[in-house]
Image (cartoon, rainbow, N blue to C red; front, side, top):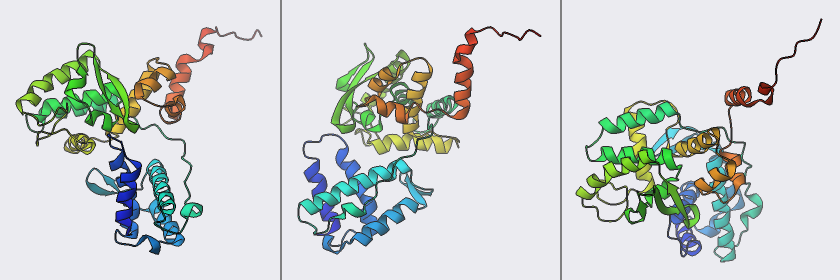
Amino acid sequence: MELKEATVQFVNDVCVGKTNLTPDAYHNKLLYLRVYIGDDTPMDNISNQDIIDFQKYFKNRNTKRRGSTIVSGHISPFTIRNALITIRYFLRWCHEKSITNDNFMSVINIPKLPKPEPKAVRKDTVLALLELAATTGFLWCRPRNIAIIYLLRDTGGRLGALALMDVDNLDLQTGRIYTKTKGDNSITLRLTDTTVQAIKNWLPVRNSLHPLDHKLLTNRQRVGLAPQGIYRAIYTLTERGEIVGRSNPHAFRHAFARDLLRNGADLSTVSQLMGHSSIQTTADYYARWADDELQISHNKFSPVNDLPLINPQI
């Protein structure tokens, strides 16, 4: 069996019953291995040394994908770790199914993640994106792109959750939308009045396009935007406005969590709003502060602020 065929069978086998974007995520992670080894390479011809060489190449490559474009830059440690975990799962599955006789477990090295740096989008960047969304692009997509930006800022939702939002599961009266998130888990995304109004501005335009499905966010083909389409909408605005600084959709998720915490929300509340399975995930990846932010918080919240200055008697 060749490598590409094995990956297809693997995804079909382990993703039985999945209705979300997990199969695509698995295929995308396995694509790193397929491109390096070659789709038509027989599984029996892949050696331990091939896997060792692949990991060295993967960890040190100097290009990465941004949207549909290949750009210079190293792949993030988080992406490397997640991809290698999936590749290890795939190779173990191949061994268990007797597709290959080799057990590659001893040569796959899953790196530990460094403590992540803050990756939040700034408020001025959000405002710049909103202004661009209101004035650039086709007239029909302007209210849609504005709604996307408010949804990202207001909910902290993952791209997959936004892509799966359905108008039938939208409750604008109470400010809620029910959708699916990572792991095919249900999640309630909560909406403030501003975001509700942005969605109301988009809905008549959406309906006038006679969409072919019930997805809230649609494209020019009148079908629901895939996660990559949502990413591309933000990336296009960033390019047109020559915006400097983080503006990718996941940076909105980081900002959502950090701003909630900064505004006084407790860690448990933030964890539930973000759909995390563990409060530890929220603490490890989102409750991270730069040095200058820690200094500001210390000056603001230090218990010494409640004490008078007592000078020594001389």
